[in-house]
Length: 465
Image (cartoon, rainbow, N blue to C red; front, side, top):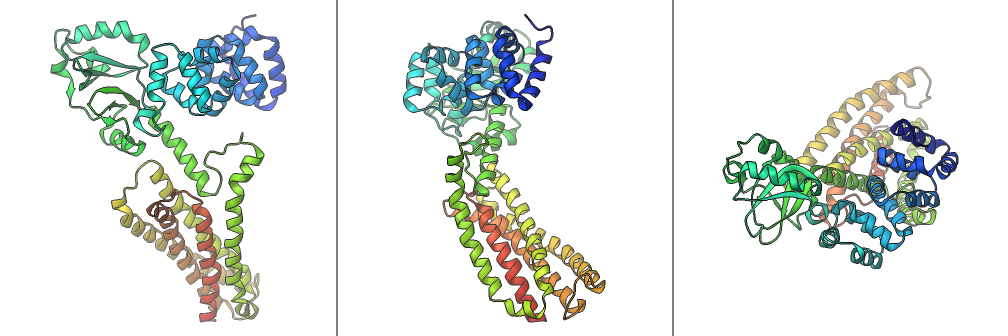
């Protein structure tokens, strides 16, 4: 039975799979023809359904599809899940599915498989797909070679615009991205670039060498993601050509590949900054997640004991003015939140390659200024609120609001300024020392804000009360 509105049905099943996956599994298992139609009509929704059902069911459902639809669905899945599902297929069938995918997408999936499996699948893939994947696979995923696609329009420099249009008509099915047309010489050395939109409006008799942009911006195969992102943003490119040592065109890095890489790295930075595994997801096994998190939590325990030691040294002032124990967390939390804001801004900038080393001191001075301004505003607010609470006898005080409120204000100002500076400085310092700048940054930040928040607050109190 063929559904009348397959896209609408796919969306309904996608929503149902998140709430009642077992029922959806049973329905699709009994209606394989419907499943095939859904995969052809809406591969994105079908991929979401596979994410929600059990791995065994996902493998069985993928087996039902032909290789073109399987490839379209796998492109929409997380690379880790796509790799797991492909490994469940017979090797020859898995290789044939990979042949139907863009080469860079196939490489992304293969990078999540064992090396021997990758070698076997590439050997089984036919040309030209196998050759393209074999060429791309050795490059790290965050370099131009790992991000680029080889399915681009390449034309010789000596033809006219009319001839170029005719050639593109013959190769359009083999070209994944027609945003740009690249012009090369007889040795495939990059000579120029022309957007497809501009090419359409060029008079047919005009030569490509007359209308192309000569000596276009390009990157080497080994260029890292930060360099690629910076160039694409600076020149507002939707794709950037990739060349080898001889200047020969190897492919193009599309804009969406850069965005995907930036988003993936930003999420890894965030996970690492709080001590979670950079590769950890909600699908990671329990024991693996524990192994990733436990070392940093253990370090957090040791650092927390340092904070406890600082507080214990000041128990005398707390005994003299018990209300300080109630107000300490206020100062610490203000500093903690301010530091995390600064940390997030700096880590995000690092993730997208927007923090060159030459600007480090400018960034630190700016963050310190932000911390001082926020601290001054919140210090005044904290003083007024403390006076109001103590005057209304909501908190009891031995020294009175006139002495306790300034302690809160000064401590809040100092902690916010120091915490904001620390939030920016910790990842920068880690990078300078050669470590991952996101490496549990928030754990070290918490130590600083707690020591300054609790210890600094009590030291100010001891000096003023």
